[in-house]
Amino acid sequence: MINGKKVVVIMPAYNAEKTLKQTYEEIYHDFVDEVILVDDNSRDNTKIVSKELNITTIVHNENRGYGGNQKSCYKAALKAGADIVVMLHPDYQYTPKLIPAMVSMIAFGEYDAVLASRMLGDSALKGGMPFYKFLANKFLTAFENFFLGEKLSEYHTGFRAFGKEVLEKLPLADCDDDFIFDNEILALLFYYGYKIGEISCPTKYFKEASSINFSRSCNYGLGVLSVSLKYFFAKHGVFQSKIFKKDAKKLDLTGELEYFYKEKGKQKTGNM
Ligand SMILES: Nc1nc2c(ncn2[C@@H]2O[C@H](COP(=O)(O)OP(=O)(O)O)[C@@H](O)[C@H]2O)c(=O)[nH]1
Ligand SMILES: [Mg+2]
Image 1: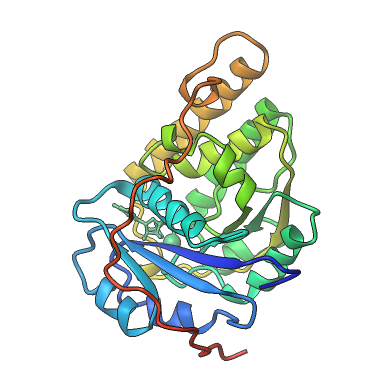
Image 2 (image 1 turned 90 degrees about the vertical axis):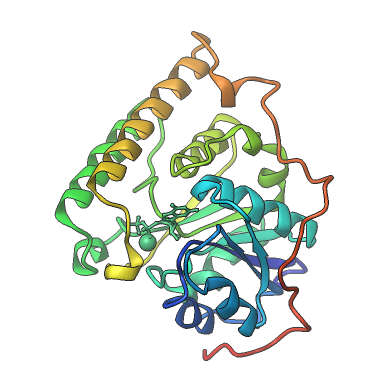
C-alpha cells in the first residue's frame, strides 16, 4: 500500500522455475499487497515453485501466449482490488527493487503508467543485450515515436506499472495474445491521452532471461511497425483498425477465475 493505494505485482510466467525465487525475493514487500503469477502451461515446475513461495497462482490449462497470459494477470489483479498493478517478468531480467519508485509515480497522481526503460542511460549493452536487439530497439523506437508523435526512450521493456483505471478502460481483450500485446497497450495509452512516465532500469541477459530467438524478434518488429502505422491512421481519421475502434472490447471481469493456489496472509521475505 502506498498513499492508500493497493499495489499488486503480476508475473506472466512461462518456464520460470529457475529464476522465480530470486526475482520474488528481491520484491520489497512493505509496499506490495499481493503477488499474482499466471503460469501459461509451462513445461517445468513453475507453478509448484510459485505455490511454495506463497504466491497467488493461476494456471492456464493450455498455452495462451504472452499477451493472453497478461490478460489473465490483469483480470486477477483487478479482481483482487488492485489500484496499481506492476508487471514484472519472473525471469530475473529486471530488478524488482525499482517497484517502489515506479509505483510512487502513479500513486501520487503524476502518471497513469510507468515504464522501466533499459534505454535511458547506458545499461542495455552493459547488461548484455545482444547488439542486434539494441539496434532494432533504437530503430523501432524512433519509428514508433515518429508515428505516435511521442518521445519514449523505448516501447519494448517488460517491466511496467499501470493505474487500475487504464486496465479497466482500455480495450485489452481485443489486443494480441502474443508479444505484440506489449506494444498495443502503449499505443492505446497514448491514443486515449494517458500519461506514461519512464525511469531508467538495469537489465541482465542470460540464458533463462531471454528465450526470444531471431525469427520471433523479427515477427515482433514487424508487429511494432504495423501498430505504429495503425495508430497513425486511426489518429488521423483514415481508418480504425480493431483495437482503435470505439467498440473494441475491454477485459471481462465478470467470470470466476480458477486459482491453483491463493496467497495465505502476507509473507514478508523481502531482503531490502
Ligand atoms: N505465455 C508465453 N510466454 C512466453 C513465451 N515465451 C516467452 N514468454 C514470456 O515472455 C516474456 C519475455 O520473453 P523473454 O524470453 O524473456 O524475452 P526477452 O527477455 O525480451 O528476450 C517472459 O516473461 C517469458 O516468460 C511463450 O511461448 N508463451
Ligand atoms: Mg526476458
